[in-house]
Image (tube, rainbow, N blue to C red):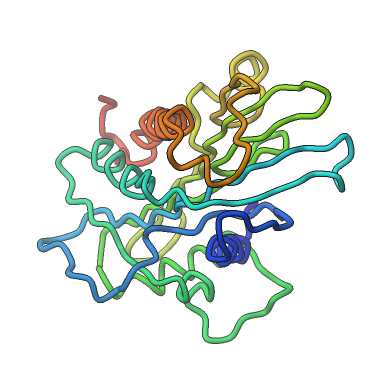
Length: 263
């Protein structure tokens, strides 16, 4: 499970510059949601509040024959508007519901809404729920949806591209996890990894071997430097397509009320 501390760690990494090297301890995202909480709120009631942490952090991973030889760099892809895409897919999955995006600052994401932090002990379920509870007074909603980065069954994590050694494959990935919370009790109602396929043994074996949305690219598509990523339409469109497909498949059953028929 993704610890909330790792979400904040990657947020800080993304502010160090496009070519910054870092040890990727399963980091999640810098978020374009991390804006001023004083921004004008949408009017009207809120049935679903969305806290997107898809962010703008893109990770470039060049795997070595041994793990300690792996090389990582990060770059911002804020122009891809991935958090906006997340909110739009929640709206599409809940027609007729009022859906509102909830803003937060980088500092709030870093602290998880806590005044004091323990750098050694984090629990994803507790920490993410605490962050939702911290943001809730900003906009009271019946339910809250958090979409954050997630790892697959291999070494891919979140949004990025990876190159395997010995002329191995180049994989583009967009792996996310969805949590739905009750707006009154903040209990976790439903959760699931965002997948483009059914979560069956056959699908995992044949259609989803990396344990999350990914696609193999020509090795020539691996960026020579981080700055090449943001203006690459193949990478941009690939990430957006996988993110859209996985959210469109996974969100509707998570947001459907008990007894409500499937669309």
